[in-house]
Length: 169
Image 1: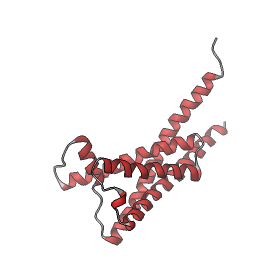
Image 2: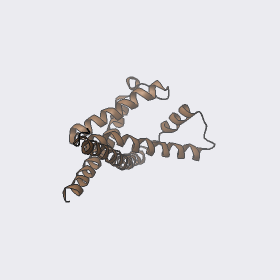
Image 3: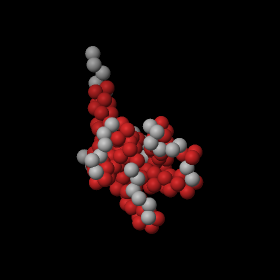
Image 4: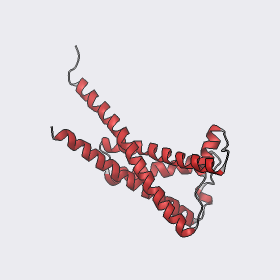
């Protein structure tokens, strides 16, 4: 005999997972747009060139070379937006399952920033953070905090909005 309460619980859980993934992708894209805008302002002020780190990661992972500087910039941009959008998924899932607000945003920031500083040096495409200048660490942390905050605000708002859709029925 089947437990009739398990089916609705499973359906609700699957719906929350699917919703969290979708919300996370949208929130991740929004956060990437906000982070990119902040970086563009900073580059205008400081004269810094755009990072080619996304291109280096793709090159190292997939083993191919860009045919031109324009292709290299395109690969970097697409990778940056794909990576940022995808990193929204865990935050969307956290929000969908109740880990929202400051706790969700701080956890997400730690995961995103920590992964950067673990994976990229391990791939030998970035120096370990222990070899960075303090200003570079602060700027990198600031941009990732801007990203995490924007993603968190978007994810939490989208979850609240979607929950409101169902409560009105």
